[in-house]
Length: 115
Image: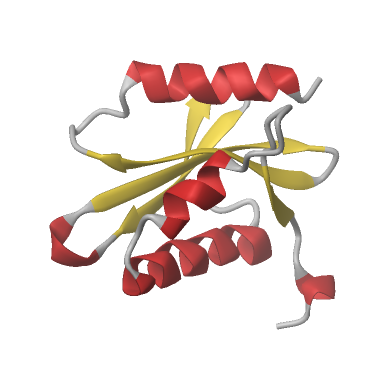
């Protein structure tokens, strides 16, 4: 698939100090789990707008990429869309049924830093 077919181009949120928290989160995963999350992000890039089961709105301009990992784990990547780009704001392993408020708050904080 050529990048010219992408409806959204994903990029990592970068802190003022140059850290890329979602990239760091992904690098903490196993190779197989990184591949799963990467493919799910790619589904959003090429299929936007896309809904369940791959993507869900969280409100306030935030969305989540939903990934089922190995060993029954669940990962989420929170993103927003800015100037036609999918900005990956926050990534985490989900341990509860509901997306934790602190993860959404962190996504909102990082989204505000983009303005």
